[in-house]
Image (cartoon, rainbow, N blue to C red; front, top):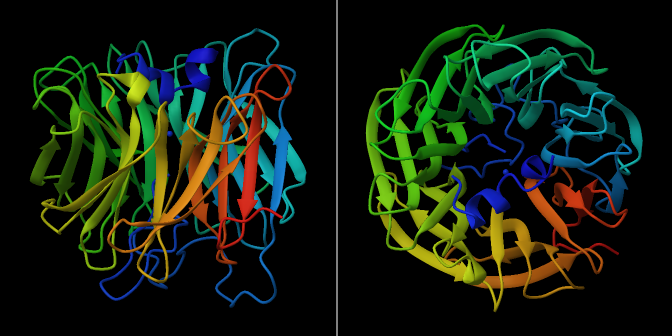
Length: 418
C-alpha cells in the first residue's frame, strides 16, 4: 500500500516514473473547483453555491481513516457546504487497496465514508462533480478490465452509492491520474498507457460521454516513458495536459495542448530543470501556470518549481522554492489579485519530518507568504482547492496515528489555521 500512499513523491524521488481544475475566461479568475471546463455560469457548472460568501472563512484540521493505511488524492467543495474527499485505503478484509470516499461537513466533520473496489487493487486520483449532484471518480483498477491495470471511472450519487463504473485500457497497464468535466457534460481523463503509443509509457487522453462511455482516446509522447498528471478543458474547448517526459531533453516537465477533438496543437518539453509538472491550469491572461518538483535527478535537493507560460506554452518566468531538503508541489490556483497559491510538502521547514506546505506568490512568482502544517512526523498534501469563502482546502496523508491517515487542512485566504 505504501506505493499508493506516496504515489507522487516516491515515484518521482525513486525515478520509477497527485486536481484538475476548470479554467477561467480571459477576464476572469479560475475558481479552483475544477468541476467543469470554464466555470462560466452555464448549466451544471459545479456543485458550489453561487451566492456570495457571508462571514469569516471556516478553518479546520482533521485526520481520519480506517484501521489500515489511507491517503487522499482529490477533494471537492460541494453544493450546500462541505467537501468530498477521494483516495485509497488498504484497510480492507482481503488486504488489497480500495477507493476510499468520504463526505465532510463545512467544519470538516465526517458525515459518511465508503469504499469501492473488487478483489484486486483499486485507487482514486481525481474526482469531479456532475450536474445531477453526483460525482465521477477517476483512478485505476486491476480488479476488472482488459488486463493488468486499467483506467477506472466510477460514478456515485450524493450518498456515495455506485451508479455505474467503466474501465478503459488494453492488455498491459493503464491508469487515470486526472479528470475534468467538459462543456458537453462528458469527461476528459488523462494518465498513462503501456498498451499503445510510441514508447514504453505514453500520455493517455480519453474523452467520454456523460455516462462514462469512451468516445475516443489518444496517446502523446516519444519512445521513452511519458505520462500525464493533470488535465483540464481550456476556454477554447481544447485540452491541456501536464506531466513529465523522458523522451525529450532527458526527464522534464511536459505540456501538451490539443483542440476539442484531442488533436495536438503544440507540445513543449521543459528539460532545463529536470522534474515533473504535477498540475497545470489556464490563467486569466489565457496563458498557463504549472507546478511540480524539479531536481529529481538529485532528489535530495528537489525543489518546488512554479512556471508561467504564454498561450503557446513559451516560458515567461519560472521560480523555484525550497531549502536544504526536499520540496514537492502538488497543486496551484490563481487568486483574485492574479497571484498564485501553491500547495505541496516540505522537508526543509516546519515542525519536523515532512510538513504540508502552502504559499502565495504575486503575479510574477515572487513569494508573498508561506505556511506549514503538521506535527513531528510526515504530513503531505497531494491536492488543493480554492474554496468559496476565499480559503484553501488541502488533502493528503499524515502518519500521526502510526498507520497513515487522511489529512485535511482548511485555511483562510491568508493560509492561516487559527
